[in-house]
Length: 282
Image (cartoon, rainbow, N blue to C red; front, side):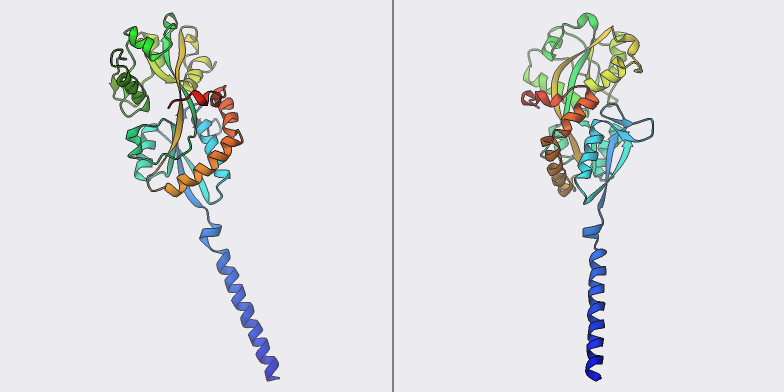
């Protein structure tokens, strides 16, 4: 009788220990709880990133990050719409873990942010010009014509693009003026004759000028967009988020191999910018 009683007690003890172990494993945060990260996006940069009519974040940059999120179960993405300036400051200070805003690479930004190994997308940069100046096809043409350029904020990567051109072409400089605001309404400035041209991204130009519901659709036959470069764009990670940036690299590489980024480029920009990737210098 004592022998059977001891066996029964031992069996109950074993069951209790196993139950405790299983309970401990199920509640392990490293296995069951995804790390929450805030993804900031410029909410007024259609078709790159914006808030749709239902209040949902969308756009090329945002939709790519949503696909990245699907491949990273260890992370839970929370999208936060904000301004371009707040995004830069917020990511640098750790308010957001990563930010997307059609960001170009600059040396100055590498001191504030982590640039991952893999880029996010491609962006067409061009000049807005009056139709009579449509023969201006490059920055060199623009400089040779001695044309005036709409101001660009010094912390805007578009400023860096023009500055780099000027450093490489000291005998044919574009008149570059730093503005107070991050960006000015270049289409309006050109249309009003305040300047001869302005730098703009193709997507916003299409939405502002060529789309029927665009604010400048009424002048679509009076201004032109002439592309001068296709440039890689990047997500900006907080300096403490190297592990997150590494995880992003693996996911985005898979998406590029599966041509998902090509599909989104066609969907949001109306063209597959990845087709000219081999000619992209920056």
